[in-house]
Each structure stands twice: as structure tokens, then as C-alpha cells.
Image 1 (spheres, rainbow, N blue to C red):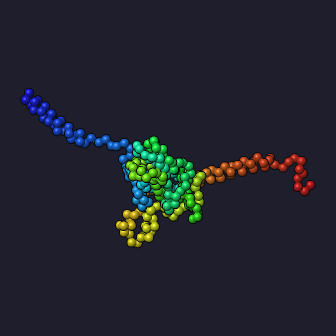
Image 2 (image 1 turned 90 degrees about the vertical axis):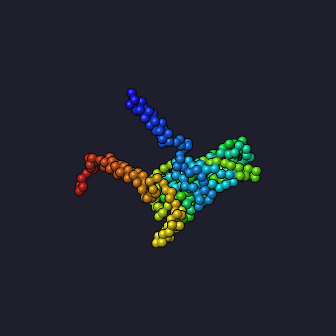
Image 3 (image 1 turned 180 degrees about the horizontal axis):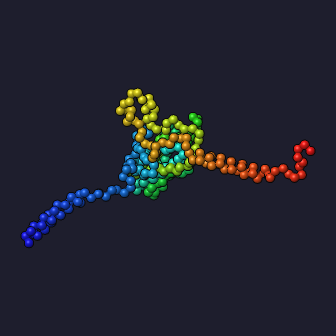
Length: 269
């Protein structure tokens, strides 16, 4: 009996001691959304926050700030940038604008989407969108075609009253791409994608320094950059060649006939 009591007390003490440890080791509740997505934005091209496609970034700021993000887009992709601005409870009418720049900091035109919108006084949020043209693997030097590399997103207000300047706002930005495929393929490719730090890296191949390496951009598409020469156009070209050859053989078999007509005399008569 005494042994049973001793064992019961020992088990009770062990359970009380293990209780807090078990509670401490349990996973804590994570906030909603993707925890690895950025929660702040840059204030210039050089300090733009890197954003992976398919993830939603959030940032808080003030009305009048310039908010910058950067993402990578490869050849054959058609990126779509969407932004949501959550406005304060009390504000006047204001106009927000979403701009997208390529690796050469050239402003890219939106193929479709409302990149500039005006919020009414009673509006609580504002949605902006910009779908770019398909990224090309190669382009002429005089053209303004989107090329593979880093793209910059800038979100800011372009028209507001002075009384609204500095009011707190929160933003959400997301980038998604549609793979267009061989229909947008071109003959040629860039030697290097247009990413920050490529020129600095090539200029300091012999003398690498820590200051130069920190300036390089680490953002790239999932699976790395494409080589630029392969696309599904090669498959369709091969299939088309095979079908053309079969059509030629079939047409010849149908038109050559069974031999010389009966009424045609043989040669020499």
C-alpha cells in the first residue's frame, strides 16, 4: 500500500513538472498569411524590397511616400502586378498610381489594367493592377520591349490635398505571371539578365570585394534563368515538318495514278 502511494505521488509530481514543459514546446499560432513574405517596402530603386512571384507583400507607410518592390521575370512570362491601398477612415479624394520599371529603369506600359485610380472620400480601399507585355528573350537596342531581369514596382499617390499628406496607409502587393510559351519566343537571347550588380560583378572579376558582392541582387525566378534558346516552338516546328512531309507523300500517291493511260501510244510509234 505504501509503495502504491509513493508511486502515485511520483507520477503526479512528474505530470506537474512535465505540464509546463509540454505547453512551452507546443508551436505558437503564426499570423495569417505567408510569414516569409516581406512586410516593408523600399523608398527608392536601390532599396527596393525583393518580392518573389506568387507571394503577397505588405507594407505600412504615409500618404506621399514612394514605396518600391522588385521581382524577377523571365522570358516568356507575362507579369501582372496587383496592389491594394487601405486608406484611412477620413480623407479627401486622392489619386494613386502603380508604375512598373524594367532592369534599365525604363517605365513599362501596361497592356491592360487600371494602374491609376482615384479614391472617393468615403472609400476605404483602392485596387490597382498592371499587366505587362510578354517578356522577350532578346530585343533591338532602340526598342522598349520588356527583357528578362529585375523589375521594379513603385506605388505612390500623385494627387491629394495638403491636409491628407502624411496620413497612415497600409498596402498589399502581389505579382503573378502567365507563361505564354513559344508564341512569344524570338531568335536570340541576352548574355545576362538585367539584374542589379551584373555590371559591378563583371568589372571586378579579378578583384572581388565584399562591398561589391553585397550590391549584387539575389532575386531570380524559381528554377533559375532560362537559357533563351529552347521553347515549345521547336516542338510545334518539328510536328509541322512531319505533317507537311506526310501530306506531300499522300498527295503524290493520290495524283501519280496507276501508270500510262490506255489511249496513249507507246514511244516510237
